[in-house]
Image (tube, rainbow, N blue to C red; front, side):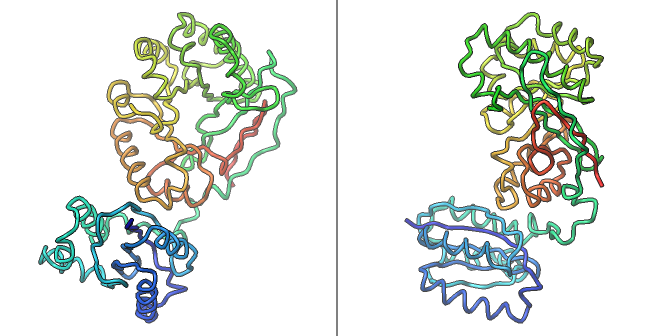
Length: 400
């Protein structure tokens, strides 16, 4: 089966001079003939854009070499997919300067691609031409290099934590791990999430899976009080808590319970954020919106967690606009290498900006992903890069 792989990369000018590009092209073209790979390479002085076609295992092997090649930086995978036929019947590699190629295509739409594509599937032809057009028009290929980031943009390497204040035990023996969500522009903690942990530190899903409906309801009420009590002891000013959807949407007492608990520990309502996933809202649709409306009418904020991992995110944004969305880690992880993920996150961010919804990226673990997300416009981050969850303790983030 034939596949095509399309990627873009920034040229590392310290490792590849303009004079050596012709030599690179000649050697790569000859090597691709041996690999049974065809395609084109576009070059616009700062970036490469390449289409590779051939057997999947050979293309993937070549792409791994490209990722390790010091002449390429900021390599972004645009697509890898099966294809009905080659766009380029001649093995090797055609090389063009992007500006010249773009002018040729714009002045004569039948130039080169259509001549090569007469036997190809129309969808494949159309998608590939769109990717080429985006590159030749400098869309998505003009991001600053990592070396060009100003001091204020590399904040993750300048974050420190004060000495941790440890709590010996929670009021009702229910443990929580606290993890910050930080604002890298304002250089402050946006809020801190309380994550339920079992007696031995196990995650919530493992700890709670054996409880029945009534046990879960009682646990949620007690654990909420414990989380707020711990937050007060740890001097946490803005707290988010995850709720079991059955307790949140079916309990008639939840709003009053939260208000009384907040008052007891000297919190005001807007300091609490309720986190719920889009799946939970849809599964409990009948009662969800009334409950969430009650909470928001009291000043308690709402965050949709794991946004993008469910199946109704956009309809929720249209029908019930939350205060915050947290983009799921499955979309965030390795975003700096994925053109598709970058396009998705950029669209989510633009949509939420227009509706005054705060966007947070969760699961950020690498400096490269952080830079990519920051360039899109995201300012709020959660992940191991900025702070590990710590059980029954929390230390304030500081920016040096």
